[in-house]
Amino acid sequence: MVSLQGAVSEHLSSMNRVFQKSEMKGQAVLVRQLRDIDACDALIIPGGESTTISRILINSGMYKVIRERIMHDDIALMGTCAGCVLLGKELIDSTTDIKLLEALDIQVERNAFGRQKQSFEKQIDIKGFSTPYNAVFIRAPVITRIWGSCEVLASVGTKIVMARQKNYLAMSFHPELTSDLRIHQYFLEMI
Ligand code: GLN
Image 1 (cartoon, rainbow, N blue to C red):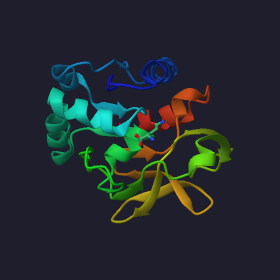
Image 2 (cartoon, helix red, strand yellow):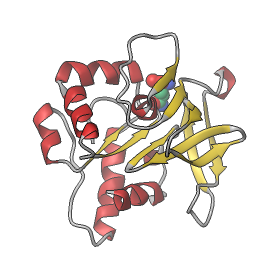
Image 3 (tube, helix red, strand yellow):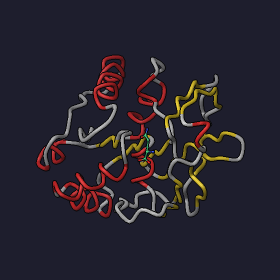
Image 4 (tube, protein in one colour):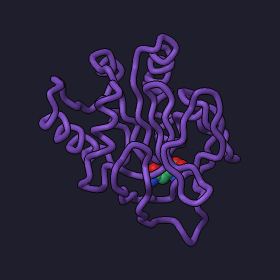
C-alpha cells in the first residue's frame, strides 16, 4: 500500500483482516520508499489529494517504477478516490499538476459530485456482490468514460463509480472506511 497521504492505516487494517480470513499467504505493508515496492505483488493507491499524491510519486521515483511494472503486466493495482483519478488514462480537470499512471482505460473527472454533495454515503449495487454495498464518497471523482476491455462494476445513477480492467480496480469511494471487507477481498482474489 502506497503510504503517501490519506486513509492509509484503514486500508492496511482492512487488507490484513482479509488476509487473516483467506487461505492466501501474504500481508499488507506500507510502502514508504521506492525499494519497498519491489516486494509487492499489488499496490493500493489511497484517497487523499491526487495532486499531492502525484507529486510524491514522481519525486520519490515510484511513478517510474509503477509505470514499468504496469508495462510488464507485473502488478495488481487498486485506486480509491484520489487513487482512482491517478489510475486513469484521461482526466477532466484544469490542473496540470497530475501525472496519471494510465493503468485503466477510463476518463475521470475530479470532484464530480458537486459542492452540495461533497460527502455522502449510498447503497450501491456492485457487479458480482449478492447484496448492496454501503459506499462512502468524499469529494469523490466520477468515471466519465470507459473504453477497451474495461468493465463497469458500479454506478450511481448515470455516474460510473467503480471499474475493473485486467487486475486493475478503480473506485471513486472509500472502501477502507467501512467494516465491509468485500472490496478488499475482491482485490485479493485479483492478485
Ligand atoms: N478530491 C480529491 C482529489 O481529486 C479526492 C478526494 C479523496 O480522495 N477523498 O484529489
